[in-house]
Length: 270
Image 1 (cartoon, one colour):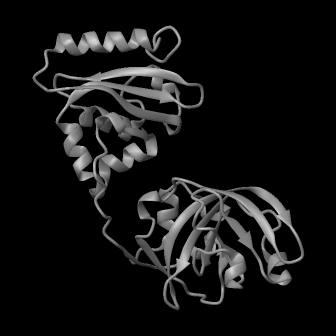
Image 2 (cartoon, rainbow, N blue to C red):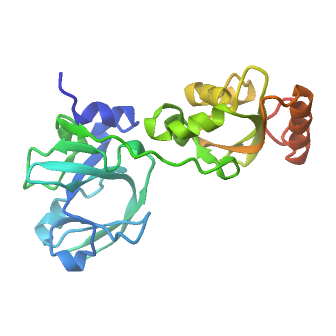
């Protein structure tokens, strides 16, 4: 059975009945294009604007548009390539021909940006409910370009990013690097700033230990089981060669627990 957009939305945590799918012509300043639909300033990474250049089109846009907008760029007469998924944080202004919304880019479908191409059945329609677009066919998903490993001391990952690192081909070099070391890692709950200090040694490399967090969110840690991993941020405090004595790794773990006060005021039980 041919793949359609719907399952990809659901896999990304987007309920089609509660989202918009939008196709715009290109990324530009709205005053330069004179087109009806969505326009965005390519120099801003997080804030985008919807602009209707005809009052009737502005009125037809939902009075209270949904939270998530799945945005595509026109590619040929009947195709569209995924640009990004953005979150609508509310309307900030409007006039007779223009409505402007505060929009921020999200991590939804991040691994498919610029890679996913769908067939666009209605060339004259620039936006629709995602439940309608869910039946649109997937024309192709291009191979992702490899992403260079940034180095152990620059590694800071959200839980969604960690899951991508553990499964996507473009992060193959990251998995190789993480497989080569033991070490002390830090999990920060970004909702309240509490820390969890953990270690990977013995039979487990950093990659093996973090794979468990990517899979179930808690890695078997009792305190973390009660929390939502979507707010976790993962980083490395210190890495060790696999030949390092376990006692040295244990000592480093103990030091960081004290330094970060992760037992009394954090997420470590001991």
